[in-house]
Length: 130
Ligand SMILES: Cc1cc2nc3c(=O)[nH]c(=O)nc-3n(C[C@H](O)[C@H](O)[C@H](O)COP(=O)(O)O)c2cc1C
Figure 1: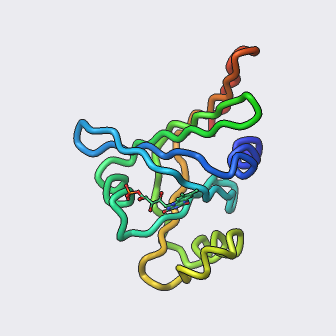
Figure 2: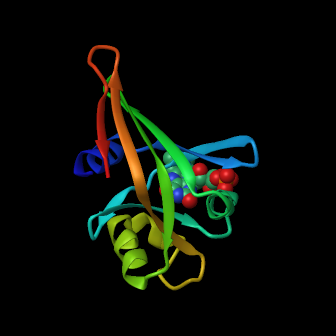
């Protein structure tokens, strides 16, 4: 899981796909941080992406860096603890311009039943589950 976090942080941007009915939805994301042994992302509960995840927690993300791409497929679980929200905001100080831990909008979610696959054109895929 640390390798996945490192890749996502170094890539800077990844693309998070959700489903809405039978329509895939995708957008750029940047937050990825391990808190208490789980890989979290951050969003706002006012966004469509949050509403889609609450309706169907299955997501997949993809990031590309240095000739390698990473896909993480799994489910996202919303964590309503102040500590988790604060830890994410501490890890991404720039978010504090927009959010605070108890603003009622900030949401953090962690991956469950995740399969991460590192791929490239030159090596066999490597799979990590967490
Ligand atoms: C580079 C980049 C990184 C982003 N990271 C995040 C993020 O970590 N969390 C988030 O909620 N929105 C992030 N955004 C903004 C979302 O992409 C944007 O709010 C998007 O419209 C949300 O999807 P939705 O419209 O389907 O709800 C980021 C945007 C960019 C350009």
